[in-house]
Image (cartoon, rainbow, N blue to C red; front, side, top):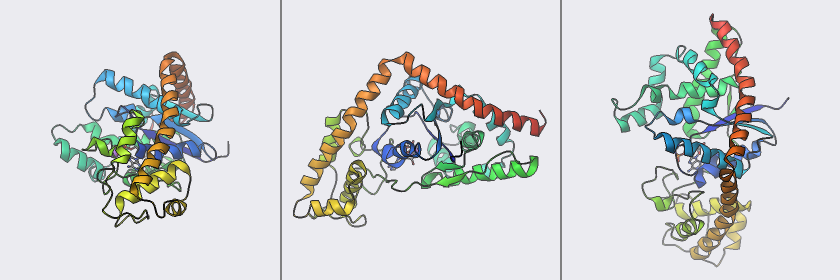
Amino acid sequence: NTRLRVLSGIQPTADSFHLGNYLGALRQWVRLQDTHETFYCVVDLHAITVEQDPEVLRQRTRVSAAQLLALGVDPDRSTLFVQSQVPEHAQLSWVLECQTGFGEASRMTQFKDKAQKQGTDRASVGLFTYPVLQAADILLYQAHQVPVGEDQRQHLELSRNLAQRFNNRFGKTFVVPEAHIPKDTAKIYDLQDPTAKMSKSASAANGLIELLEDPKRSAKKIRSAVTDTGREVVYDPENKAGVANLLSIYSALTGRAISELETAYEGKGYGDLKKDLAEVLVEFVTPVQARVQSYLDDQAELDKVLAKGAERAREVASVTLANVYERIGF
Ligand code: ADP
Ligand code: NA
């Protein structure tokens, strides 16, 4: 296979993925299958860096995998797996932790933010070493490219540094991964506060569109999205953040250019835009939800797909780990 290899993961930390996850990340996962050799995982090891309920985690892991399949991740073209089913992730992570400086890890801004929120006594060591596990995820598969958003740049930089450091010390072992920022990656904002990114931890649930919620509820959220006191439908993120957000969602879901949408809504108002977008959204999520349900209805088949994915992942991961162990003297 001469295609560049891509690895990406997503945490099973919510009952549903949201529209930001899809338009900002998962849609690109699906597209990359056409051009790259793709490895995608549900990163449940990462999910236990914060307190979890065992049954909820198990269910969210399944539902996450079902959503990836429903959105178009094709298990015949991608290696789709659950991280904890590939023990090499934890094994390589330990080796890399021993190559990571304490100060270096302490500088990770995401850890600092999260630890501050949780309090240093409650924040786990796992939360601290989270980015090293992420490096293990990437380096195990010799991934050339990692699709990342801006918020993940520092972590990817750590992965690169660890790969280079290990290669310099023990001989060429890892591909040094690069950030891949796919074109047309939309950043989606909260519908009630269009200056904040749409997030599962949104304070106002009305600002968040969950892929698995009742589509009628999503439609209502779109129709009551915060806009401004103007009426002209134009793309102006600085002065009309709410309308701009609706236009980017509309454009991303339909493939119609924003300029084309502006023209189409000339002489119409925000109400028309919201009403139409609500319909577009319902049309998008309804079949996705049906597919998710059919994957969840056939538990044995879903387990089989994931077991096969884990097996394929291990074929690659075990080769890397054996090489690493050999080089460090095990
Ligand atoms: P959340 O921010 O809701 O906690 P995650 O951090 O789990 O979501 O993000 C999973 C993926 O979805 C990441 O690749 C992230 O960059 C992307 N993502 C999350 N929220 C958005 C958003 N509002 N717009 C675009 N992409 C997003
Ligand atoms: Na996040």
